Amino acid sequence: RGEGRSDGSGGGSGGHVPPAGAPSDAAKGKGAGFNLMKFLKEVPGPLLAGITAVITTVMNQLFNLYKQRIDLTTSAERSAAESLEKQRGEIRAEFARTSVPLIYAVAALEERLLMYTNPEKRESLYVPTGNAEEHERLSGVACCSGPVTEDIYTTFCFGRVLGCLEHFRKEFPVNFDCGTHKGARIFSNLRSRISGVLSADDEILQTFTEKHFPQLTGECDFEKLPAGPLRISVASQAFCGDQMLRSRWENMKLPSGRYVLTTAAAKDNLLSFSEFSELFASSKEFRSAFSPIFADIQSLNQGDTRFSWDNFHKNDRRHLWLRLPTLQSSLVDMVDFLDPAPACRFVPLHRRKRVLGLPAENKPLAVREAVNEMAQIRDGRSITKSFLHSLNLYVKGNLAGDLLGRGDCPFSQSVIFALEEMGKPYQLSFVPLDPIPNWYYDIYPTGQVPLLTDDATIIEDSASILQHLISLKPSTKNEKRLRMCSNDVETSAMALSNMQRHLLDWVREAGSGLNNSKKSYDSKARENLLFDLNKLELMLVRFTQKSSPFLGGNSPCLVDVSIAPTLHHFDVVTKHLTTGSGVDDNSLGPATREYLSYLYSYGSFQKSQPPENVIIEGYGNVMSGKEPLDKKRIVWDVNY
Image 1 (cartoon, one colour):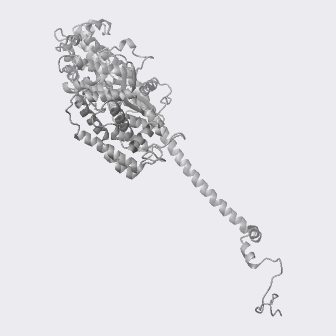
Image 2 (cartoon, rainbow, N blue to C red):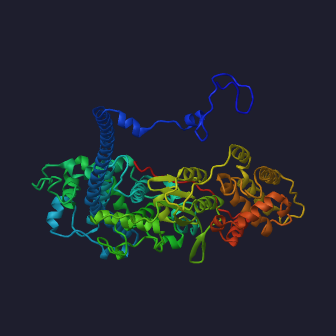
Image 3 (cartoon, rainbow, N blue to C red):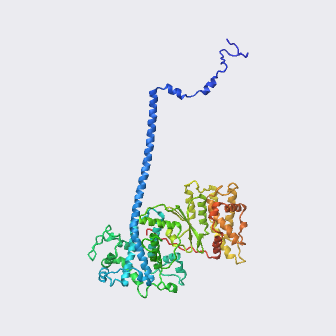
């Protein structure tokens, strides 16, 4: 039946025609799939409960394992933090216990040295008093108020300072960290400076004094001043300091019948004046340690060889030495650090007079905060994060009258440009270089700028500082990372590594030929500078375009922040100082001019620019040959 199709076409037997409106087999297969509800109805209830229990058990076990790992990590971090805080607490307590005797010892010694440089102040200084016979028996001196007693007491003051320094060296041989890295760094540098001044020879102390006290060596007609007496080698300092520690003589019977008190029962861990006097008179070892100091102090007090500061104004070098004023000033710096003004707790301001009578320095905010934080630790007050910024940048400053502003250092400008571009908060401090202030030597003994301190990390070179900034991650949504340049840009920029030096060489040569009409400018310096400018032009043509005006694209990269200040200085110098010298604004290619124009309108670069007159003055000094010489740097070893 059905031999043919309804349309009359021949069809095979067994053909099936679905009724109208019924879905086709293809449509049925297309909509077929896994039906969860049907599966759950068909699965037996016990089996379904078992599967659910297994899944729940596995998930609970995984969650418990994860929680245990988190708890272990948190517990380890908490334990490490508690251990670190306990260690810091012990160091803070030790610092508070030891720093107060150090304040009194340093203050007493700086006053004694002031006495020897200003004999008329002797009456206002402390001299031990008491029964003359007792002093003669205890110290072996003839009287209690004459010059010999003063010399004994001054020797004792030296011993107290050396004892404190030796105590800190023994207790903290690697690094002293009481919870604030900046304060600890300044404290270590001050200790090292005192030790270095005591042990320095004539040449080293002369260089040190030229940096710290240029008025001392600059106004005298003679070439060099001798270091003078009271030179104590590093080994002798350690030996004398060890002799002053009470633990060295613990339970020893003195000639008076008394015993040296134990450290726990004594006021501090250093010998008292009466104990010092008895040991100086009775112990051969003790006397051998302090006899050289005592002899030098006696020589200061003798009539024909008495130190006379008036000789400084008379240009008389006979009794004028470098060690006394530099040591006395270093000791006052230590007092100012440990007991900061104006809230002086231990040493009033009138007892902090300097031999040189230098005016008070305007320390930057970062230094003032470090000093105040150390004072809080010493006094046992609560410690708060007083520093607004963990990044502190020290750059070359320019002194215009009484105001200190930004200097003309292009390397400092590069770092400022990078920090402004990153949006990182930082504390900027200006460092005048003629002379470099003492507060900066306290932070960094070599006096080099720019310098960046990132909490405990010190980075001392502009290239190293920029590499460190690249590694910093943004901490807020307003910050961003400093962009790395491509390998091609970095490779091409290596040819411009000496561009700043070539600019300085050219400025020097241009200065020497300004007044010489026959001067030829076809020199190696001119050739090097023009080569750098041509290389920069080729780089900018290759790697920049209107949509990405920087070598790093639409924002500056490491190469941009490095070369932009030098290019800016070149533009200022050629417009104002070296016109007609063969290298001028026409030496810049069109791409370089466009690049420079975009830099001047870019916000981060604008914030990094020093005043134009400062740049003109700085390079004008280079042209006239008045640029400061690179003197030898003095570095006192913190750990002796």
